[in-house]
Length: 170
Figure (tube, rainbow, N blue to C red):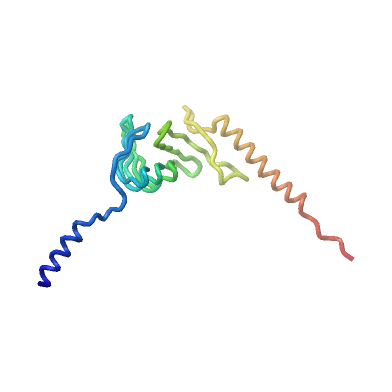
């Protein structure tokens, strides 16, 4: 009797769905998602096949590519690792990186280069482009870097001018 009970219990446990999220297909303007869906949005693991032939396999959170995943571009380039809100950063060297941006709506895929700032703005990244002589700042990148440097210098000068105080006394 106990043996039959264990067998029936085992069969019941095997028949329970272990994945709470629904696996489904969603159509976006850029392609088709086949995978986990929660509250009508792509959420969880699955495969997003873009209309141009590129394929993203991995995690999506509320229709935004976020988490561990792999993109295989239409040209066969592979970008694998941690995606943050649709962006993947590929380090080229200490001062240059390539950013891959994926979205489920609108313009779905593009890449850009960025160069790390110098001096006061060494922790910020600025827009760059690939040219015949290598990767250089775009005019927007130069303008943004200059503005950031000026802002940093104004902050230092402002602190010095605002500081001081004290003294006085008798």
